[in-house]
Amino acid sequence: MALVEIRDLTKTYTDGGSLFAGTKREVRAVDSVSLDISAGETLGLVGESGSGKSTLGRLILRLIEPTSGTIRFEGEDLRAANGSELRRLRRDMQIIFQDPFGSLDPRFRVEDVIAEPLIIHEKMNSDARRQRVKELLRAVGLDESAMRRYPHEFSGGQRQRIGIARALALRPKFIVADEPVSALDVSVGAQIVNLLRQLQREFGLTYLFISHSMPVVRYLSTRIAVMYRGKIVEIGSTAQITGRPQHAYTSSLLAATPEIAAK
Image (tube, rainbow, N blue to C red; front, side, top):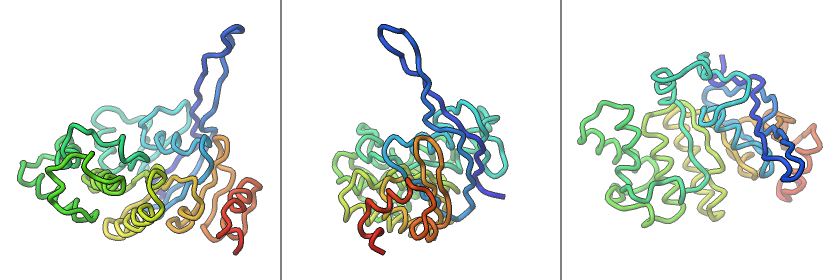
């Protein structure tokens, strides 16, 4: 059984329509998507901006509600879960956001940012929480002295490490990494990608790694799903997608990446 199973997942938005005609138009940001994610793998989700990648990631975690379709986590129907059931399931599902500047509350010290999930979900005294925060900071390559500082005192790469530490706080099984390196310099982004690989081995994580960069997805992923205009147009092993693409859109993504297209 797959860790995550989605079937015919759809998210439809309605725009305001024409000012004069008054007609409204439906836009399918995610259009009847079905896929499975196995425990321990990294499924790379790649496509251009506006293809629906981030919307799909948020739908899977029920951060936004789907229009139709099913989402199962370890066999449990997420759409049927509410209240305490959804809270219990969300311990095992976390997200790393794209923007390391906007995703951390500037009013909180780093200790409070990372400890927030522990306060909500865990019955721990303050000493145990503080020790856990220290462990998480070490796991992402930061010194425990960071605990008393504020997010604005850190670089973009360091802030993303703090966001990763927060995502790891409850020892989740599944993480949606939503373009976690797109706002970073290339060298800093490479460090974060390598950190994610290391943490996957250490914590037994499963990733949905969302990106518009085929080289990054190829490096990190076990399998790749290609998304175009709200649909998954191709899915397969990393070697198959990058070496023998079947869809014209996949070929165009590869052709736009010289270091892949030349191989």
